[in-house]
Length: 161
Image 1 (spheres, rainbow, N blue to C red):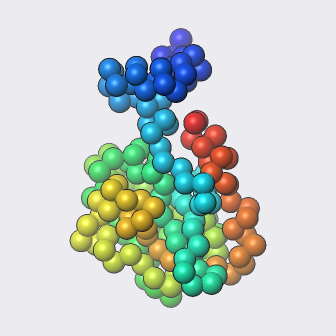
Image 2 (cartoon, one colour):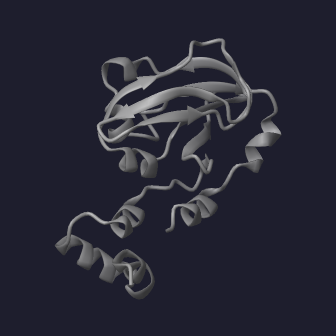
């Protein structure tokens, strides 16, 4: 039997934390530690969406779970401001020590701002994915589409938590 599967279903969260403290980093430990804020919306591709200060504009980035899976981020390629994106269109790439992954726009709209700080410090994605590690701000074409994204509980289930 797969050990991580047995851990997921047989140990309580407290027991899992105790076990994980004594063994190498495991899938079960990553799931237990992933930060999934309740007030955000999520995609199956591990992007998050949160309202920005300006009406109709949303901040987009990758989730804590995604950055943990990628490992140390070393480069982020983002689009130019003014670019119009379709829902689920690739808008950039993120390069980590382990892999290079595409970034997908959770919603259709216009890129109104990119996080220029990621040019000089891409590790912000690892250190603060929901804060200083954001990627783009998107003026959404149809705000009602935000409600079609996963809530925190659905995303937690999606990543196996």
